[in-house]
Image (tube, rainbow, N blue to C red):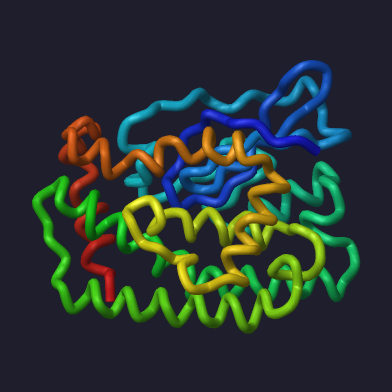
Length: 256
């Protein structure tokens, strides 16, 4: 399996494996929010349907309410179900979604916790600092502080419960759990949060995951998300169309 950047549409918090064709073997694009990976999967068909091209603008920045995997055989909303389905269908390298039941259960344990405690928490700083102000909305400071506390608590749990003394979140090999977790953590990092400072075990885990993926590829795949503050300061972010305002306002209102 190899990774390369996959230019595909989807909300910044989507989790989606998307099929592409390339060369003489099929490939899956693993779209994880701001991370867009193309994953070579041995045995996937080379004549598969191609996905629609990127549309840019606000769909790339994560304002769409829902994003489905664009294939009839993968009719899921953004969730770990897409990753699991396509990992099984195209028989990815076993370490991503282990065939061993105990190892697989550890991946599922993390994915369940991730949906409850990571996805809705670590994306908030992006809304506070970039997306909210872009439509003239300021998130109350008490909500910002509650979010900071929630992030600290989640990081503590991530480090102690899931990582512990292991190399990766679900064991000694990298899995979908690591890829999903690191993608989410990079959102607050992109707006200045020093999540890994003072957390040597998490920092070492990040280095291992990035080393596995390749530093150059990580930088390329994160280029949009890591430059979002600069884009906001220069006022080069695309102007949100009126039809996405209700979705954006609803998301901001749901910040606890």
